[in-house]
Length: 168
Length: 196
Image (tube, rainbow over all chains, first blue to last red; front, top):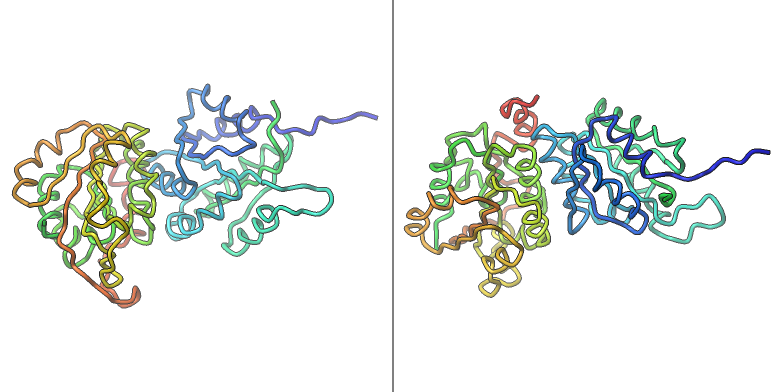
């Protein structure tokens, strides 16, 4: 019997961003993304824009987009809750083709999900009519490209839920 | 204190080819930028943004480093999103000028005082956040005398204006709207900036 490594490496995510000519990562770090931070800071094709609170990310991304750049947002699901009015006013209302990479805090395929951050996030995205994809391993990483293509085709925000901690 | 319309008129007269992101009273259809603008195609009227005008302006300034971007903000708006000052200053956009219209009140909801009205030191906050240059004016004459210096300063620049309150108390759905909406401006701006 063979075993597969079920881990998502930051390099797989960064490769997807590079493949799609993403220019800026507007983000607020969460507990799962330190490996990602180390890689992003070393990638010359990506500019990092750190923020103080997640609701800023969609507005900064909107300005970058109108100015001709290709930003992506990287926050945690708790940050999606914080960002409600930004997603409404500067994402959905202005047809921003924005991909939001969202750390899926509390996600598990096993047992009962006790973390309300996990229990509510998909309901919230459904309520806003925002489509989303789940990625857990390197094999799923190409869903980021799918999400980027969909956001551009539909001119709407699309979420990618990162359901695992990044591996080293 | 400075008359709201006189302030936007002075800024518009010295804007050059700057994109102006304006919100709340600075964007009021009767006495804000839409009432005096000479370059409407370079105006970005931001509504429903809950304090995010400076964030939007930052993104635009980073994307268009050769073009000046001005943000005309409100004190109630910026109070909702004070961390944005640190986010903005941290990116050191030399082409960004952040102008705060401080009328001390929530003017569109009946004129209730904002927290810290008359007490908070806006210019001091901007300095502490790391803006490269800061200014504060409480009368039009001084602002008019200094505006060339303001426009020439390397950013990020913060300008505090003490503005005479003009109170409205009309439900959102009954307010007079500028014909050029945020959605229209966002749709047209990429072509105007030459990046469509």
